[in-house]
Amino acid sequence: MSNNSSKDSSEINKIWYYFRRKKLAMAGLVIVAMIFIMAVFAPLLAPHDPHSITRHRFEAPGTADHVLGTDNMGRDILSRVIWGARVSLLVGILASVTGTIIGITLGAVSGYFGGWVDNLLMRITELFMTIPRFVLALVVISFFGTGINRLILVIGFLSWPGMARIVRSEYLTHKSHPYVESGRVIGMSDWRLIFIEILPNVMPQVVVVATLDIATAILLEAGLGFFGLGDPNLVSWGGMLSLAQGYLRRAWWMSVFPGLAISLAVLSFNLVGDGLNEATNPRLQSEGFNTAESKLSGGKT
Amino acid sequence: MSKKGEGRSLGQYALLRIAQALPLIIAIIIINFLLINLAPGDPVTALIGEFPVPQEYVEEMRANFGLDQNIAVRLVRYLGNVLRGDLGFSFNYRVPVLDLVLNRLGRTIILMISAITFASIVGISLGVAAAKWRNSFIDNFAVAFATIGYSIPVFWSGQILILIFAIWLGWLPSGGLQSIRGDYFGWALIVDRARHMILPMLALSLRYMALTTRLTRSSLLETLNSDFILAAKSRGVKSRGILWNHGLRNAAMPIITVVGFHFTFMVAGSALVETVFGWPGIGRLLYTSITARDFPVLLGILLVVSVAVILVTLITDLLYAFVDPRVTYD
Image (cartoon, rainbow over all chains, first blue to last red; front, top):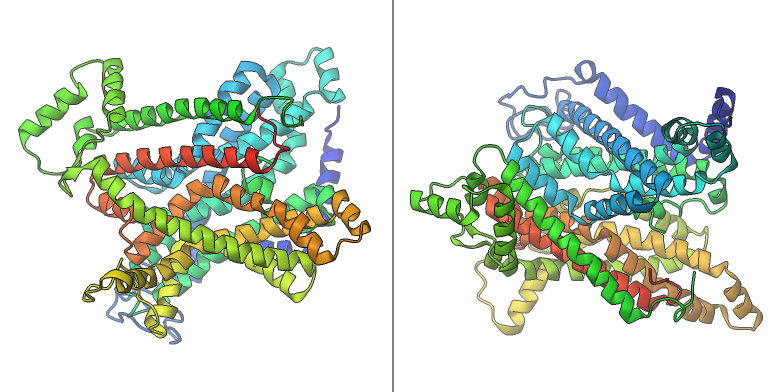
């Protein structure tokens, strides 16, 4: 069959070969790695407890003790930015994984079987693409209460339609390939063909979309945090910006640093996603840059 | 791809798309209904919000919503109410929800339209310049701008704009619809309001400017490399003529694409930007209703905004078919 492990690893080598030639994508990867390190080692890296309230309120950045200043309750901004990486990454990655699992399942079934199943699933996908995700997430979280698990679930359940469309179109082309037809001839079941034979060949596209989805999920989580619907027990960048809104005249640093952190996180995942897209798609090698629109518009090209 | 005339006509296509949009609207009303019924505690809480209301009103809502009936009856009643325009009553504002939402909708639409217009003008200019002088400084700038602008959250760019233009430079007001103490009429009022709209408009447009730049540049590069441009060149058409007459005719597509596919995101962006700038539109209403736990308003906004998105998608699809004759009507 087409996918044994040596072929898979050579495929990964090939993608890496193209990927590492892209300076922007590599820069994105370095930033992603740094945010990971920040998130994992937050207790070691943060100079202060991010929750500890002190009397050093509104301290401007640049002092030895508080490099990025303090907020309205005297909490250390640098420590809060470092701890905030945890929430952003956790929600971003797990929501993207949730959306990816739903998107792969629905897209694969839709593309492989076609017919009325496809029709029905695509109508549902259309409904979820139309409905304003952010507003729906706000309503659901206001109704059911917040918490990091709910944030992940809600964002995940609202972010699968793009993935479903792309996976569907991949399955549409793959299902008539000789390797699938010969599998069918020797009596492989549909499920085996869908998840064991075809899926590995679709994975590069899936990884690209999932990476770009992480960026979108981080933005969505930050937006919910800004609306005061983040997990109240955890430090999040969106929540910090929400707090900063009330003190813009007093303490610009309360806004600048968390905002910079969100932007860098989103930018780096977008760069990695774009780089992967070009590396997995040799057709795009020459054009560079201009290729992620199809992903951004949900695969409708 | 079939040519126009072979398949359906544009009129038939329009009817078909409208017929497809209706079930979507019904589906969204059903989602709203499910949210009310799945809400923790009593559905009445979801219908009224967390306000101390008279017991008689609670009873009236129970009867009106048919809480003593089975779920199918309730769904039909709810559909009937919504289709008649009854989205409930806001106890926070003491007005019917639909009036409240429609009242605010206009301000959000003005903000969105000006942001899209501004983003299109800047984005297309930058994209055209980048495609024309490929790999030049301006091209690199456009690419960097498009990548970074797409990653910055709108509420943060809003705060940064306030910091720079309202607080440090003092050129523009930091928020609100108009000057509180100013007593303006006629032109002066319009100018005053426009000054208040500049920063929110800029904040909201940044992301779409980035997208439009990116789409214009890539679609123009693709077009300029295509055969019909080569043919035009060989006929001796000057390069400026090629860019404007042949290339840019295709530039309407990026705008329609951005508006059509990203309208739902723009709704989110507008909600956040309005909150940053205290712009009294739908987004600001959303924020205050979350804080006040005014659930009927939240549901009303979700419904109205979803229907707006369906209509915008419908219109852009039709425009697409109208502008680009290659689009097939199926």
